[in-house]
Image 1 (cartoon, rainbow, N blue to C red):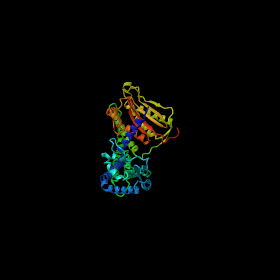
Image 2 (image 1 turned 60 degrees about the vertical axis):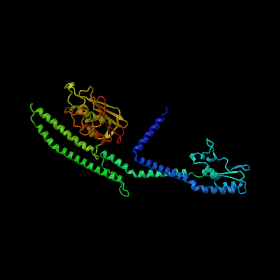
Image 3 (image 1 turned 90 degrees about the vertical axis):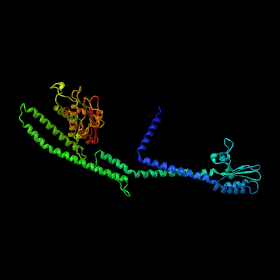
Length: 476
């Protein structure tokens, strides 16, 4: 099968897309079009001026010069081949003599000039309107002698062909100018690359390195734009730092009254009348304490200087940690209503036989697994199958996937699930719990380890996949 046309079409499409999105290429293209237009105007104008004014200016001089050459050839009355040869040796001309006594052509192999060739209607090409009338050329370049000989003069094209063509110089100059224009435009618009890279850093939350605005002879618009974006970045960083400081301060200050409230609640008498309110109050206080803990942890992980307490986790240690988290999560879960009070919920653990050893932070991995499993169990009420936890080896990386078999999430909300305090419309009831920090913390843990976080609808249910990279891997 011939795949060349699609490849050519794709290359053309990519070139058009690149041209449409590149200011540099468009500026160079404008320069080329302007240079070509100016060249055309100059050449066309010069040709038009010459074609309109040669009869009045150059024609008398040319006719006088041709008369002198004809007189030199016919100095003895009859055209002399020797004198004609001397003229062609001295000048880049062709001479053709026709008559009753002498028939000689200095360059018989050369093609006849256009004004000597006959057209379709029996007339020379220069006699037609598109050449301006060939009789002018005949009167200028053709002479007749008294003895019925005809002498015709022309240019020796071989001499001009042996010399460098002007078009070659013109093309070389055009290419050189194009290269210089490209280099200048590239240097002129180089700050755009730094501005784009800086904007991407700011968008990712990294404000540590400002955009480098190169100082030239005076500040131009691009340098001012870079400085403006730097100012905006500093303002955003200050607002984020103020928000983080306020959040941390509030979280810290809330711990003390929460601790006192929990202590006072536990000191309440355990009676049949008080116990329901006491247990409900303890649950609410614990939920508030967990929320504060999650907030503090999210701020620690979102900071660029957050330090992880890494240590090598062998496959056996990772499996043991995973089983501990599963047991801890299941112990906190109530029995599902449709399975009876004595049937606790379940989680299926599926692990590859050979897993690599990675250098990870065990406490943060424990937090990651706990939040993923809590989220899966919360949305598995009434599901036909229990949640699944997969540990897969992907080369030297590890993939952790937790999947439930619940109702899933609308596709339009998938991209927002890992945002702080976001909950899908189907999970805004208190029964289904959560304040929208669980998956957000999981994403922060994955990013802190240099990994990736992905959420997708598994149909049925939701699947969350975290890939932990092997950039700090010990031997497997």
